[in-house]
Structures are given as C-alpha cells and as structure tokens.
Image 1: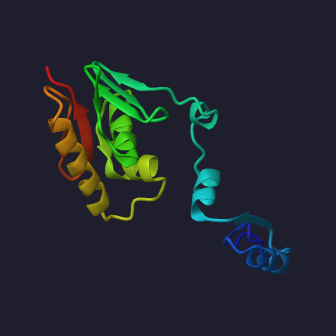
Image 2: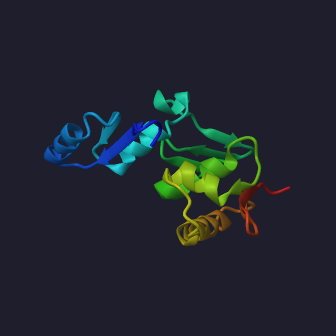
Image 3: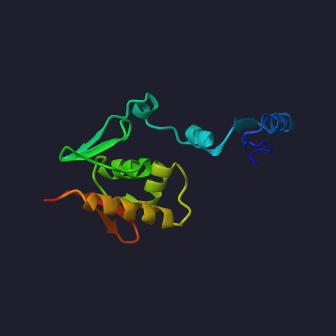
Length: 157
C-alpha cells in the first residue's frame, strides 16, 4: 500500500457475476483491472511488439531456415519441416536476430507468455522434441545448450 491506497487490483475470472462483485467491493480501493482469464491478463501486462499486434509478424529468415509462425510453416532449404505450434514458436525465437543465447527466463516469457518459475522440465522437453525433428533435416540447424543459462541456435558451417 502506498499512502493508504491500493494502486492496482487484478481480478481474473470467467464468471461475470464474480467480476462484478469484486469491482463493487473494491470500488474505493483504486484502479481495478478485470480479466476473463490469465491469457488476457498476460496480454495486458506484456503486450506483443507492434508488428505482432497488427497481425503481421512476418517470417523469420536465417540462412536457409524460414520460420513463418503466422503461416504455420517451417522450411529448411525449401523443404518443409513438420513442427507443432510450440516448436515453431520456440524455433522462431531462437532464430530471431540478434542470434544469441536465449535464457530460460526469456524463452518462457516469449514462447509461453508466462513467468519462469525455476522449473525447466517443460522447456527441456520442448527443446528435445525440436532437436529430434531438426536432426531429420539434412545439415539442418542445431539447438545448442548453454549449461545453466539457456539455448542458442547454430547453423551448419
């Protein structure tokens, strides 16, 4: 509390009656943000970059790799790779310039839209599936582990 006032109260509920009750009870507390679910709250707190908001993210191109998340297509040397939505999003982040190490925290925030809570199992599992599929692409990119930090994408030399 700052000066006896609550600056922000968030209510996340799909139930309209619950949201209305919370707003009535907290009317004098300060700003009240009401959301239907956590996805809506994340979108409010962590808005997408302007190009994504406009629905024009465009494909990520890195050498012979093209990741088009909007078009649901990934190609390596013009050959399509069969990836899930999550794998496409993960690969798009790793291939986005500048090519660098993506920390676990940044990947969680960017791909899953949530906070990193220290449990990397879901991320490791997704990377394992992505690596297996990338190995099927002859001479394809490789997801490298930077132990204790995160991942980076490497193209063949």
